[in-house]
Image (tube, rainbow, N blue to C red):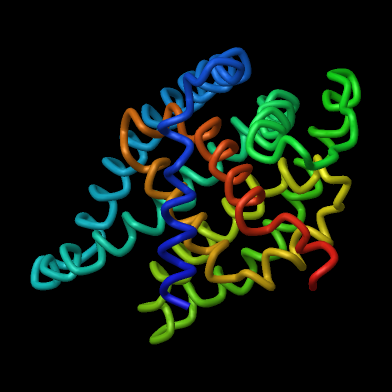
Length: 245
């Protein structure tokens, strides 16, 4: 279990070293530009929101409970960071999805040159990818319901940061593994089945990507790096899983 999680975490970061590999650069630069625009806007909004939220909590609590703000604030910040960065990651992915599919295909063909992949034309990817992103958004929204319940139930809500982090890791695993798996002709339901069969590997991968999304600078290259990492993980560990599970 722990070994699979650690391996997945390494795959989550593995794309960083291949970002500017010849043959991949053309599919990396535009997603990086999109990430820069989206995360710059997100950072500006998040800084203002956290400042207003801290002031509101401090003003609301009586003086003798000021110490409670210091206890709640780190936990709340973790939850907010996960929610906001995964949200902005999804927005960036929606915009860059056609290029992400082509980037994944390039990595798959390089890593497993003898493996057959259906031919994808750019116009087909432009049509397919945004529709798939919208289906994933519906799935992520439904999946967030139990996590929200954990966050609002007194007593249980101490587990909220862990629940949000697990949710974020799974969300990112589904998001980025979709590109190489969809290139093999698999649908979202089949992709989720494969990832559930390799749950700890997938969660480790998502945790690695989540790490990149919350580190300034790295978050700008998180999207193409995660696509490359997911494609490497598919090539090394998941290829053939559609028939094995």
